[in-house]
Length: 104
Image (cartoon, rainbow, N blue to C red; front, top):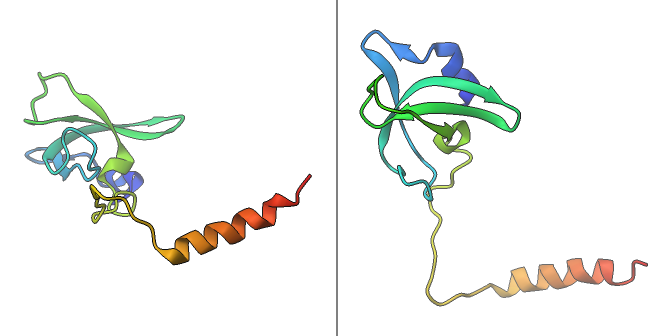
């Protein structure tokens, strides 16, 4: 869900702040349901002020809104201990580099 949609819906339910899952796999809260208390528009994008337990007393952490977006956070990122690349990708890279080889 895009940040503007969450902001438009209102960040609080009758029982408190909205609960959303952090989808960015490198964030320490990845996979956790966190409570979104408020949204702030900043120059480089919206951030949500969040807490783990929904408390208004606890210090809130600002989490970029895109870290809650399924479109921005690919779910099937995988790493391998043995790096590899397909031949088609190498061929495409070679073609691209050939285009720029002759530029002044």
